[in-house]
Image (cartoon, rainbow, N blue to C red; front, side):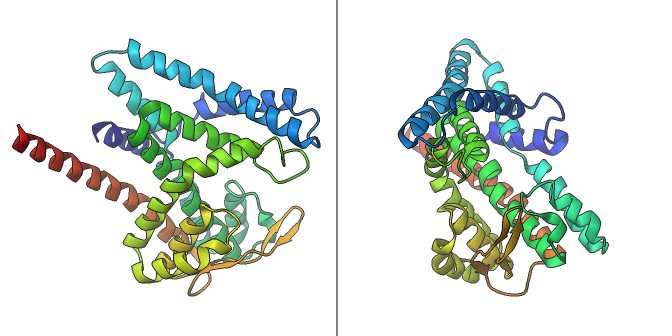
Length: 311
C-alpha cells in the first residue's frame, strides 16, 4: 500500500521521466532484436519461434536482474527501489497532460491544434478527423491506456511485485512494437501479443468494473455485457465498452488510418464524443486510481484487525 501510494505521488509530482526513460531504452533493445531476428517474416513457424526467442531475450535479463536486486538490497532501500520501478511503469500524469492538451484545444475551438495534439497519442490519420473524431480518438486512447499503463501495472505489482510489473510493462511494450497484423509482424509478434492478452485479461476487467462504478453504472454494465465481444481486442472491448457506457456517450465507429477508413463497432450509448468526454475519461482514470488505493488501504486495515484478533 505504501509503495503504491508513494509511486502515485511521485508520478503526480514528477510526471514521466523526460530523459533516460527505461521503457525507451528497452524499446531500442527490442527494435534491434527484431531487426536481427525477423529476417524471413513470411515463414510462419520459423518467424513465431524467433519471435518467442526474441521476447525471452528482451525480457529475461531484466527479470533476472530484478530478482538479484531483491536479494541484495536490504532495509528501506528495496521498498524505495520498488517505488521507483512502479513510478516508472505507471503514467497517470503523462496520460493527463496528453489528454488535457487535446481537451483544452477542443474547448478553445482550435481544431488544428486539437488534431496536432491527438496525433501524438493515436496512430490514426489525425488530419482527417473532425471535432467529434478528435474527441473520440483521445477518449478511447485515455480509457485503453488507463487499463494498460496504470491499472494493469498496479495489479501486477500487487500480485508479483517488481518482477510482475516489469514483465507486464515489457511485454506490453513488445506488443505495441511487434503486435501489428501486417506482413512483417503477423507471425513474429504473435507470441508477445498473446502473452500481453493473457497478462491483461484480469486487469482489463477490473478496470472496466472501476469505470462502471465511477460513472453511469447501469449503462456501463449493459454496454460491457452486450458490446464488448464485438471489439477486435478481448481486453480493450470490456474496457472501452464499460468506459463509454460510464460516460453515456458513443465511441468507436469509422476511423481514418493511413491505409484507409476502418469501420469499427459503436460502443456505448448516447451523443458523440466531445471535449467533455475527454475530460470525463481522464476523471475515470484519475479517480479510479484513488479508488484502488482506498480499497487497498481498507484491506490493509482489515487484515491488521483480523491478525490482531487472532493473535
